[in-house]
Image 1 (cartoon, one colour):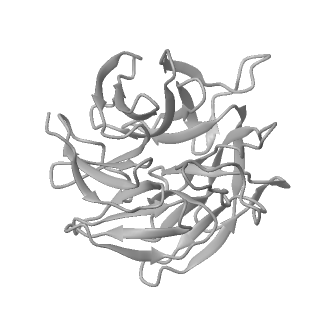
Image 2 (spheres, one colour; image 1 turned 60 degrees about the horizontal axis):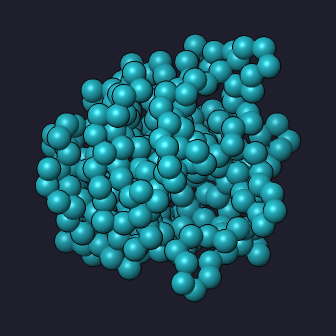
Length: 303
């Protein structure tokens, strides 16, 4: 397998990469409160001054970008990770970003009267709605519960579909659209949820918080971040602390674990003509990497 090529440096905890048809990558910089575009030559430019804590990013059916904004975190010198909510934090939100002007508008900041805490990642289904995770803010002595949600891009409807979950991070859909995957950060568990209708998950059994089943978990100090689904149906999960991209089959077997040049590879997405060009955010060092993957990623519904 080819080594990782570094495309861009100096990024402020990058996440949420979206591979564009022109070879550029639009991504988020949580620490810098913005979304940026990385050109094929590595040049970084402002895409959207979204504010807060821009996290997961996806293209919707209208060609606009939809952003999970965690509301902002406090950063200290010498640490790449956020240290709890920013002093100005009020709530997390879903924002719509105009692809031409970069203007960010608020779409959702609450569900059923409850404020969103720290929306993290999202994925659009073939019907044009999107699933998203809320990781939950971490405080010094407690944390908010996380959950899974489904929303429409016109701002008309958002529903809570699985709650509570400890720390749901990356999410993705199986190639047939019938399974929703969510990576749980703490404990490194990959959950699978059966979708019965758009935005409707199979009902949980008695005494269960949700209907998810654990597909795979890793031992040791591993933690899961975001994920991407492959054309084969495998799930590539960015694995923190150990510094790998871990590819897991729908049956729960580990297919491969590819070492990254960073302890916090947080996100992976796929592009290129054959969908085998993997873009990986290397967030501890603030870099964007690129490499050729052994198999193609799954084309997103509106990417």
